[in-house]
Image (cartoon, rainbow, N blue to C red):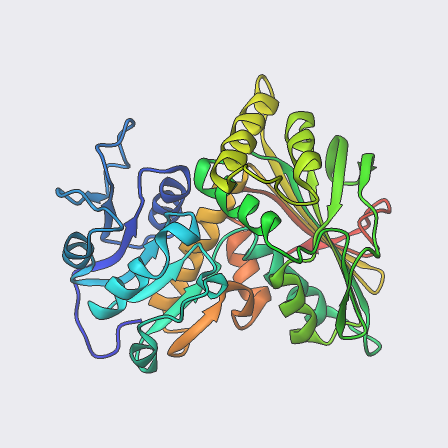
Length: 370
């Protein structure tokens, strides 16, 4: 958001050569946002879109001087790098110190260390967790809440997943969450607290909008807990769904945590390789289904990286348009979820977005495209 400041670059994207970064660039250009600046660690293997300004110097997250130079004169900086425990607050600190606002695909609230830029958030805006999960998966229930909630403490059921490729950074984030002490696999949110072991893993299951046989793992994320608190849900059942057998096998092995001697990096590399094996000769897909009080909402997309980049681009658009106040908020907390989702529904990464007059498990009586 430009508060009394003129800058020639609308958005700068750090990590622009990766799958998520490219998706951010392409969606920003489709939305007519520009100029757009791309920062990369090494020359991209494939050319970036012609309309993008490729920053001539190497942009390494750990190089404070290089980051500061890249962020200068940007109105918004998007961090498309990861994993979150490697990138930390580095991009955010550089962007905000340069006078830019921030969009981060990572949920930096997960980090143990406090952000070193709290003072700057009195004037600047930071949108964190701006991806698929966290991000879109946490925003979508707000659309159903706006549509109709007839009683207090309703039950929300969410399924997120598909047949993804886990790039190394995304795999590292996922395995890091899975390996934490007191993990929330098989847990449910009920009556204002976590209830461990309340749900079972569903193997070889058939689920609407998830092609073929899948495994649904109850996985109570921090985002799911935040959604429960935000809307006062009495119960939240949150499942991560995997359609690839090799990916499912890796997660089955580590569902109870990592064995002694195995690092999170090693497990993440194994997960990334397994997801590539599952994708051989197949088309990736992603889906999010939400059910609340007998009403459903379904989002389907091309792949997780494309949806993550799309969400980040739309967060940047909201900041540029002055729709967000100063301070830090999660993507799932964006005001007027319906407005954001209607914009995102037109993105090439989204193959379908539907409100259903009934739960996703039933034959849909389509009430209209959002």
